[in-house]
Image 1 (spheres, helix red, strand yellow):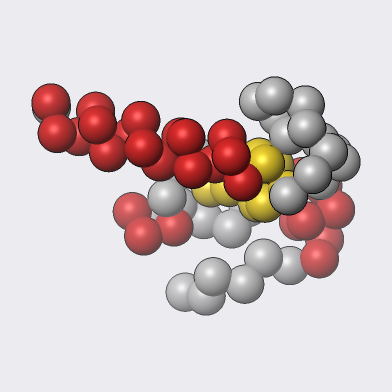
Image 2: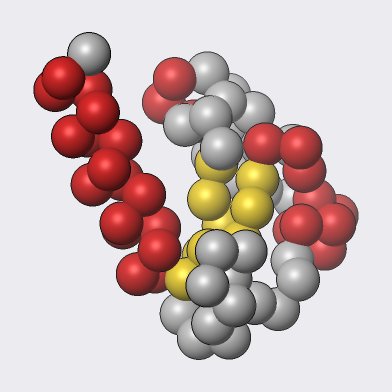
Length: 68
């Protein structure tokens, strides 16, 4: 199972802006279900986030895991 995201899938997911804040800068592909937790490299499991929103998402998830 590879972390490689195919060009076809990237083209389906890429919107040119962050799905959260609408920023056009520092865009990254983000797995809705983490790859390390079994998430697939399929369009349904990917979204575009700016680096700031992506990092914020991870911080929030880590905080939630502490309290669960």
